[in-house]
Length: 376
Image (cartoon, rainbow, N blue to C red):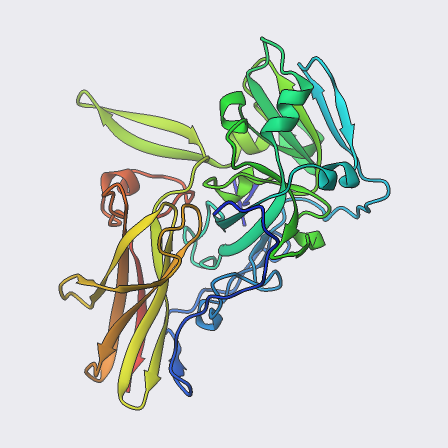
């Protein structure tokens, strides 16, 4: 996925016990396919894999069904040679092996990760998945390294690299993203080496990656090799040029353009599939991006009606599954739309909401998702 030369892109100390959540569908229920299937993916080297909504049946997404975005190459790394360097404005630079990470306190978080470009383009609607990530907390390592007073920004460098053109200059740039020191010190951030109780697969960042719960996927740097503390804002390609939301706004009666780097998740929901059991129909879906209080469903232009939350309620970072009894809809084509409400009372915006209507880029497209289905 390329635009302007840029490629898209619950805590526990217990061992992961395996998936225990699933959509509760009646035995023998048939999935009714959506009419509006995504267009063919024109950039398979970037969007390597998407979630297939109609196959969704597990609260934890298996790694081979979890979406994959790959901006550059897929590094070939091994545990024996891999090292993580902690450097820059720190009193005590460190070099850690994978064994060193595993010897530290282990922490687990279930986190629904979404690509910030998900549903922003006609060929990309499966850039989301939910997994139990495990590793060691980042904050104690930064504390041990001793960040100096001038250190305000933490840059996370991946092993993947590729060519980028800046005006007349073409360089090879290593993938990197950053966050402020305060953001990096949040206690839920992990240097993760496990996904759903198993070793990280290569496409998901083996041998270790950053997991920043509540942040869009691009911030969760894969194939992590270097953490650097610096004294200014990092301005690499994936911070200053790509993954930047451009929005038209009205300020004091004047039109202005704003430019913001993609960071935290936004509240969102999606209908996953329609099922049929004899002459009874049901709709299943998911909601994420914040702790979820409820989900409403609208059929065609009818009223919003409450769905039933079935799995994940009370989770801080993981998605919630929901169902809606459709009973016996009329024959013909229908639309199905969902909207989520979080525990603070925020409601997923409609496409015409100013926060979305004034947006000129496809990042952070969290408006209502409408799907089309034929009942016959």
